[in-house]
Image (cartoon, one colour):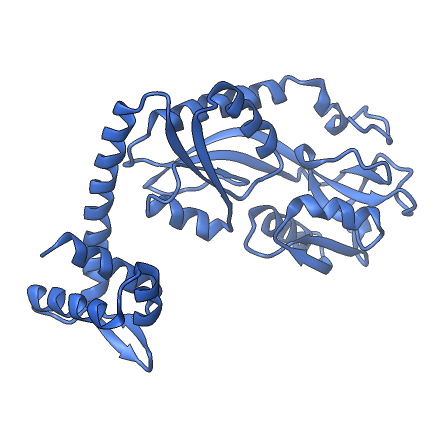
Length: 309
């Protein structure tokens, strides 16, 4: 059995299509098919079933996939560890986030302290985030909710209250707070289902007796305030995601303790590079500062209605 066979097998297993896998690997389709065939001959069992033009892992393939992923991840971890210790001030940090509102401040501070470390960030759904961790495609995930998983370590960083953002000419714009039931019948803008904050808000609204009516659902939380400002709809915005738009007013929710739990996630069995360790310390310091900062006074009971902290 060759390393190349395992790499080709993983690609085909994930894409479930020989043509797409060959394109991804930059090899010919015939070469890829022959390599998979040799692997199946070595193992003495077929790994895929053909369904039209696509491939589906059969029971043998599903079992072998778990072993192959572990083997290749261990080899990749070994390469990263050696590279980490031979290039002390350099490195690459891979992040997956479901919570992007605090990311600019965190990455700005990280860049100041470690300018030679490169980082790559992807905005993902909850399921994509967990998949990235398990496959070793992310060193850390910055999440809007905690995870209960035997393989995943979860560190709570901050409880982030969720507010209601309305235009300045809205009927609620003169108030400090609002009961959740008062929002029934409003038009909402929000992110798509699958993002933790959206799923949390929908669940709490359902308990309050209504389903939010969305006129816009997107992948960029930062754009929601612009839609609110122009009167397209109102939005649930985390406290740390507020902006200084003059035409937007924020209200606390009176009758529900609605807050997202910002957490840092990593895989328990993966090697934590020095670049990743530096990032973790920056994140912890950032949220320690946020927790003690008066900028969060808006979320406290005595804040004035027009506070734009």
